[in-house]
Amino acid sequence: MAGRKRRSADEARAELLQVAEDRLARYGLEGLNIVDVAGAAGMSHATLIHHFGSTEDMRRALVTRMTDRLLRDVIAVLETEAELAPEKLLRDLFSTLSKGGHAKLLAWLAVEQGLSQSADPAAEIDDLFAELVPIVAKRLPTGADGELLARRMIYLIATSAIGYGIAGDTLANLIKLDHAEVEDYPAWLGAQVREMLEPDTD
Amino acid sequence: MAGRKRRSADEARAELLQVAEDRLARYGLEGLNIVDVAGAAGMSHATLIHHFGSTEDMRRALVTRMTDRLLRDVIAVLETEAELAPEKLLRDLFSTLSKGGHAKLLAWLAVEQGLSQSADPAAEIDDLFAELVPIVAKRLPTGADGELLARRMIYLIATSAIGYGIAGDTLANLIKLDHAEVEDYPAWLGAQVREMLEPDTD
DNA sequence: ATCCTTATCTACATTAATGTCAATAGTGGA
DNA sequence: TCCACTATTGACATTAATGTAGATAAGGAT
Image (cartoon, rainbow over the protein chains, first blue to last red):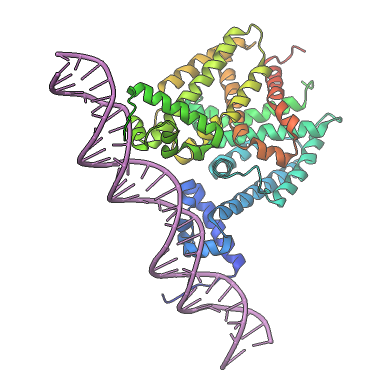
């Protein structure tokens, strides 16, 4: 009743997304309903709707935010490291994907709503991928069609990472890969990627 | 009012699962609610609950049924074909996974409910994987640790297939892989797999 | 200081889904 | 033929979530 805290619209959105991201990592997707997110951010759910328009838009904004940061990190690593080190890169990437809930949120969007068809998936994300492809391509030995190979590698890594984030544990149980081997998988995949990129150099 | 059709319990379950599978492929996950599934099968939703216990159990049974058939198909192909042809195998596998909605249903289970932790994922599925591993391992050139490599290959293919089924279209848009290249991806991955299995034979 | 914009809240309306229960009616077996 | 079993159903209860509307108050601009 007494104190109403008034933030700027940008602040409110930022706070809500931060809380949402924390809750996603801690409680999974169920934690992303507007009542709980707004409550944890110290606002009413009506305020959240006011700022995002709808629950789905809020989750979309969260996907964009998380994907954006993830891609920036990957690009930064690729531009910094002189030596191509896919093992470490993939280890970090897969870890982020599964721990932070990125993959599950993405899956939710793709499955429950139509992520692919209509809604344009945020121009920023598109730009980041456009930036990423040539960076990867530059690392490849081949000259001709290097970009297509780069796209395929990115596609392979991305699909596997998403599957890993969503069903990695379940699959591991079924295939009888123990914990340590699952942990090693991203690095192993990285090594395979390295081999695929350097066909005859060993 | 007038005519009530009475089936055996097994028949009822089978009919419901068949309808559910059709609806999943046609309408996606939203089509899998008990009212619509039961309605399409000509029963009331209470009947569905009676036979499966709960909505979640129905969906679980569906996952089991679909996974079971998928694995049987893969095993059959591997046992029939004299020559290892991962390209064709993966093309069929990925197609089934994405067209039939397997991947999305699996994702739903893994995300919404806890597929991995408690509930044992159907002994039959477990058995089929146990059968699959040595079959794949037998195809490998290496003798020592062939099984670990086989498990990793299966894990790679499975994670990528699931990611492909869930977010393949979205990713393709972002990475600017056109339709034809996405269609070719499974076969390309198959070719990579073949290379990984025959390290120095070319 | 006053005013205007808008962030915020409470209360309500709506919807969609699951699950329960007691009654009903097929069906196979005695 | 009759009976017991159970598949089937309609009606109801519950729940959880989203979204709406009108009132209120915080804070910047003039």
